[in-house]
Amino acid sequence: MTDDTQVLVVGAGPVGLTAALELRRRGVDCRLVDLLPERQPYARAVGVQPRTLEIWDRSGVARAALDAAVPVRGQLVYVNGAEQARIELTLPPEVPYGFAALPQYETERILEERLAVHGTHVERGTALVSFTQDAKGVTSRLRTAAEEDREVRSEFLVGCDGAHSVVRRQLGLSFEGGAFPEEYMLADVELDWELPAGYGVRAMHRAEDGTVDDLLVCIPLPGRSRYRVSTTVPPELSHHRPPDAAEPGEPAHGPDNGQTPRIDHIEKVLERLSPVPCTASALRWSSVFRISHRIVDRYADGRVFVAGDAAHIHPPTGAQGMNTGIQDAYNLAWKLALAVKGVAQPRLLESYEAERRPVGEEVVGRTVRHAAEGVQADPDDPATVMTREAQLLVSYRGSPVVERDATGGPGPGPGPAAGDRAPDCTGLRDALCAFPLRLFDLLRERDHVLLLYADSADRAADFDELADEARNVARGELTCYALLADGVEAPGLLLPVIRDGAGEFRRAYGAEGSTALLIRPDGHLGVRAAPASRLDVLAALARVFT
Image (cartoon, rainbow, N blue to C red; front, side):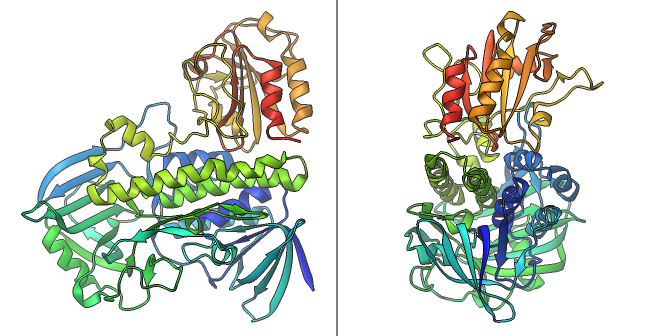
């Protein structure tokens, strides 16, 4: 007997949960399976970047995440017991969210609960055994917790099944890279010390030749003085295996089954490296782990896709991994949803790899460098480093489904270009609201949104007609707003009118005269056209919709 679904997602970590949630929010029938019998209670991936919070804002889960998380205010860097740097994690005031720490099990809980609202639950204890694909779909063989084999037929298969991905292996994707020779300890403990709350700690020991021969990294967690501690492994816990001594084709990456560190192992490291007197207690979880750095040769093969650790692995420096994977899943899910509905251009699914693989390559390279030298050694100016670490500089300029910037000049001018992240701004006014709105309020739980800006009534005269044509091309999958400069009256407009009451939208987007901005479901600009041009807007939509 064959069970049918539109999309089968394998792996119920943060990446797989994101993919399933975004598909279900758009009405796509989806199944989510995971080999593990229950959610794991380990604080593994803990850093949540501002860009991920923006994505969760779009999905409607940001509030739950903020309630469960704690802010990460900065990092204190020590070398041989002396403070070398105090890095403040500050961002421009227009960025709506800061850096947060949230244990992975809490991230999974929040996403899983939101997914359940849409009627989908994780099928736990269920393994993907094999799959085959043809021109019309994918046939997968699953083995349930009851050791029963089930066949599932789906239009698409998404592998979010981690560094040791079955999907990646059965697709025959290469996973080139290498492994670090060191082994590390991870531990979730309470640290009683007189260091400011909310700051990560990186304490190193440099030998006489300048090399780092001992390392302690502590990331704050929710709870009383809780930290996720990582440090080098003592000899008695080392598994003494070479870095690449995994199964053929498999990376030496992640927790190792064997002896687990005890509280006294953590205390010995603190005695050596803590810059102030410190007592460790209440050990909740610990593990020995290895780190590799690898990336697949391609993110898709036919109707099968990989995302997150199944596609790229790297050092945890800067908390880039889970966040990059969540963005992979979000980028892919809205495109799959349109494909399932039969309204997507064939090239739309091809754009997943075109847009996300360069991001994966950059993150792998950067985290390897930062693991060796520390983020503070980055040659870029601190503001750029901080914004990049927050994942706010990801851009899809040049993507096959992003229309070139159409500003009537030699370059994009001020404000974001087509393909860039669409920034937030505030001070927007709706006649029915007694309070100012953020731009992100207009985007929340929406997909494509077309903003038509005008600084005079005559420039807004054809906005209704343009919006009607745009909605037709988008097969109804489009929300449109007229965004008017403060004081502009256009009583004949049928579109919902939002006013740029404080002029912040005009400044953030470099809008003047008339400007059309198409914001994609993932919060990137599909086109920026000034003046607002029917041809440019419809061409941008035609790259996405059939």
